[in-house]
View 1 (cartoon, one colour):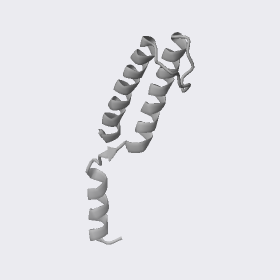
View 2 (tube, rainbow, N blue to C red; view 1 turned 30 degrees about the vertical axis):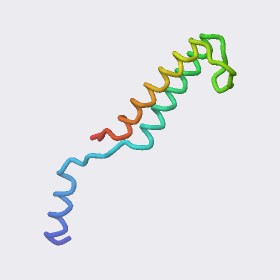
View 3 (spheres, one colour; view 1 turned 30 degrees about the horizontal axis):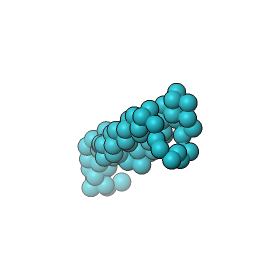
View 4 (cartoon, rainbow, N blue to C red; view 1 turned 60 degrees about the horizontal axis):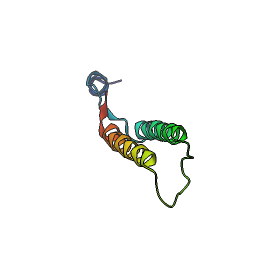
Length: 82
């Protein structure tokens, strides 16, 4: 191994690399959000994913919480992970 290759290898390993968690962290986050939404719907006595002609206030609250959780997941997807 010549000196140039060794210097490049040492430089590449010594500099901390920043990685974007991206799709995996986003998927885990959204799975958690959906799990909470299912629990919220079940607590209100409904089934998540079933369409109703008019949404009761409890379901509107569940949907608002789900929307807030999903928007937080967008931040997780773009956050660098060391």
